[in-house]
Length: 130
Image (tube, rainbow, N blue to C red; front, top):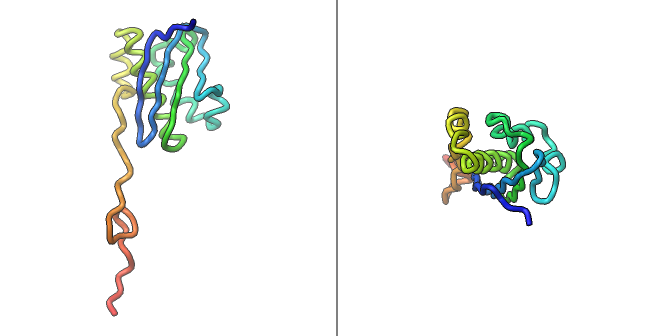
């Protein structure tokens, strides 16, 4: 039986990630796939690993992430947020460094809703004088 040390929930746009931190060797698994398989762009892989780099715990824990909703960048941001929250649960000493880098702050920017009588959130239909 593998025991989770900490659990963190991360959100970004419409993506939600549940992060489980376990004792291990630094393996990151997202939705049953390795991080390299799931996030093909190296920037996204870097975003997910940032909290581990800041706390110098890249090879201490195995990370299991379940993520859904949104696009790939939103999911990467949600994973980072959840991982940062989980790492503060593991050790409260991680909090200042994660907070200083802004990994504990939820990026609350969302897509503005479409309004009635308009083509989009702000874009209007073409005006015809005659």
